[in-house]
Length: 143
Image (cartoon, rainbow, N blue to C red; front, side, top):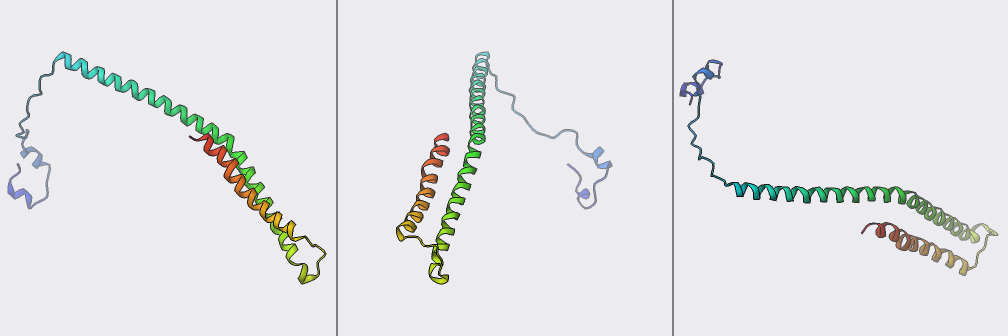
């Protein structure tokens, strides 16, 4: 231990020479381990290592499969999304043009059943495509 007067002043290089060379710590001697116990511990570690190596190889394989599926699915997902956007946009334009028939005396007139079919087919396209096809592709590929 350092003398009490060193607590009030900054430490210097001379304090290293005044420090004790060994701390008074008592360490219990290590317990004697038999050769059989060492062999058992080594075998257990070897088994754990083998199991972890197998698990690592399996995870690498799953990751590789997932990356390949992502690469295959991505173009179809983009095409399906843009198809839905284009289809819904076209139906929206048709509905807007049909809505102006009374205002400007437009010659673009559609029967109510046609308009109902367009709106219903839009909902069916979005719900059906997303709900059935894309879910089948994406969730079916991912267990």
